[in-house]
Length: 353
Image 1: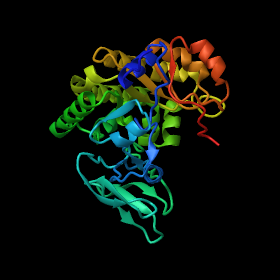
Image 2: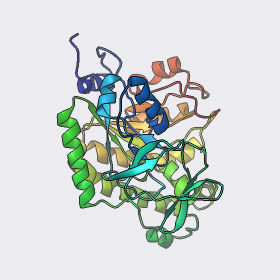
Image 3: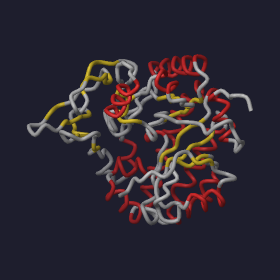
Image 4: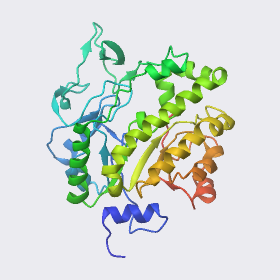
């Protein structure tokens, strides 16, 4: 077989055909990203000098340069939204300013990024004056502590929620420019790395309501949860309609994100998943697949074997990761049972020890 382009290699693989080699993803999404300090160490190892852009403030992820991607033989590159991180102030990543990493080394951060330091050295981020995330002095990431729907009791409370990620002309131009540069300037497969605000139903609800609060609402306030999930779906589709009108024809992969699994079992019952979340996921996927040929990538850690047939039924094409240490997730068994329908993007990762 002649050498394939990266785009051809990824496309063949996701269509369950054998490529010339296994495709490589290096930092092509927030799910598969690299920490900024680790990226700096990589640059030193490779003998490269470049400004490190911390595009995901929450996780402190670096944006790999095309030079690094080429050096590592990476096949995939990310198409962002203008503000790629959920649960924090909406920080546009088309303008940058000097910043510092946890270890004091220089980097670039979004121009709108503002932090304050406590007496103990911890870093705080605020949205409209309200604390939304903090980072311990030597931590490599921020912990989100912003639950704007924690006190929501009625549909009116849901309606009053102001979504922090409106689509703007500035974002439209940003996405157009990035598509132009990456699709026509490289041969890499384009991955739509969406923030949870537009690609998650369960996990983003845990963030916005608070973990314990939302879990109790699932059991005791079913009507309010249904109302919220429908509002969430409507928000997602409105944003996706704008995003995919620009990016849709050029994408190979588009991201969903919902961690339903724990180490030994699901976080909620299969019944609750099938009654509440699966129908909204199905409508999300149908909407997306009507607007792009991209494969749907589902990030879902943990012991999720029981709902993999549901994922296949609603049109999920890719599972990330295959967490081999979780109960029931033996890679050979999973491949034999589900490999005709699912591609496996990353595996063996241990997230819950």
